[in-house]
Image (cartoon, rainbow, N blue to C red):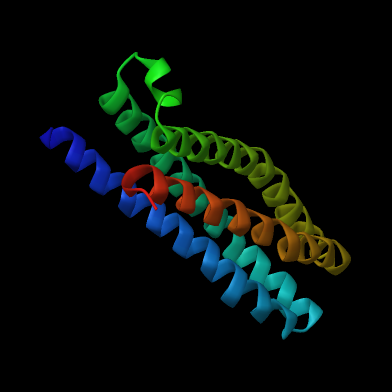
Length: 160
């Protein structure tokens, strides 16, 4: 059981870091972009967001991988046990949402990074505005899904 507790702490730390990053994006970075001129916004996006995306990749992958490890340590190959208790069902729902959000991130990050690098190379401010408009929507949706995941995991781990 000691491995379980160590992996659990690692999972909780990674998840809290991921949530904190998404909160920072939504309530600090994206609102700050609105106050910049178009040229400053373009430079800031190119300097900051590729790093933010990479960090989100690491944190989301770490959270999902450690969560899958916890799931296997707790249930082993007895997948039927997941559907026989309401709390395990919450864990499973959170796990599926977490996996889907991570996969969405791994699809969107390269696309947005490619747009950012292309805009920077061409000095295309209009393309930076397109990126900024996407940054106003995608992280908000991600925060909503991530909040649901945290709720499901908390209920699954401890109950209501």
